[in-house]
Length: 67
Image 1: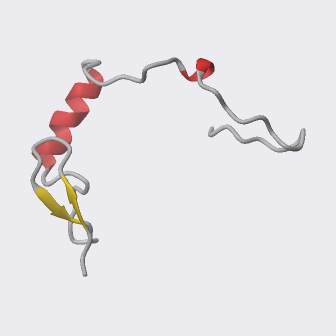
Image 2 (image 1 turned 120 degrees about the horizontal axis):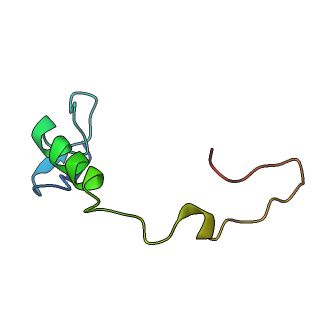
């Protein structure tokens, strides 16, 4: 059974396979619309990254934050 997802831009159903070139988007057009929303600051994170609650490292030499 092939997993399907909903295109975040238009709501069309997209098969989650290697053949679905633009997944999770249904097309390049929907991907570019979403990118434009991010670039125009239509989408944004609610807090700056330095204000997010990161788990404390268990060991001083261990880094848990993404780079």
